[in-house]
Image 1 (cartoon, rainbow, N blue to C red):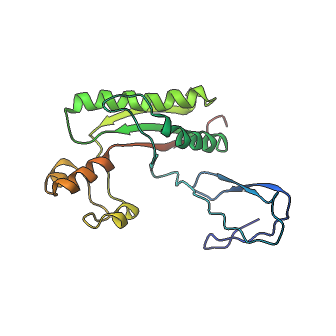
Image 2 (tube, rainbow, N blue to C red):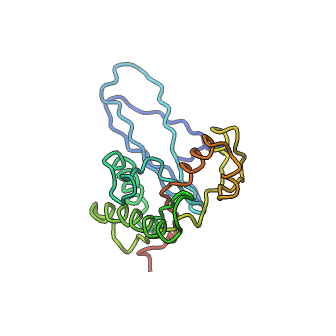
Length: 201
């Protein structure tokens, strides 16, 4: 079925059924959600919101954690990575770049090596869970690509504006507390779509 122009939709469902809902839109990755009505005994209204990733913008993996100064993934990272695996499974023609970024502390040479190893840890996890290595590119950028503040980030921090670039000059003008927040935002793991034609030709 087709949604409305504003992206909303309405669908009647039956009790006693497990539904798999798949959403797609031009310029975005497909997304899947499960809806269970097996245990429902009366009429109910459900709200199912899909998160669709824009294929032209990098997406931050929000809950990827590493041990301090190491590349090993912590256990709490696995839920986010399992969600990424599912996303790749329902978008089988997509290839991505997995990149890791550090804060401004330390030398670029050291940070580049650390970020490369961290990105490789993520890719190794995906490969171990049936994602073809041909679909994955590893990149460690160290501190070379400071985060550009998005609208959603700016909403959370009143000292940041959309479009601010969290480079060293910008961060050093902040208070110590604000500097720590900005450094934390820069420490991130992202993926971006490289191709949507894998396996088609």
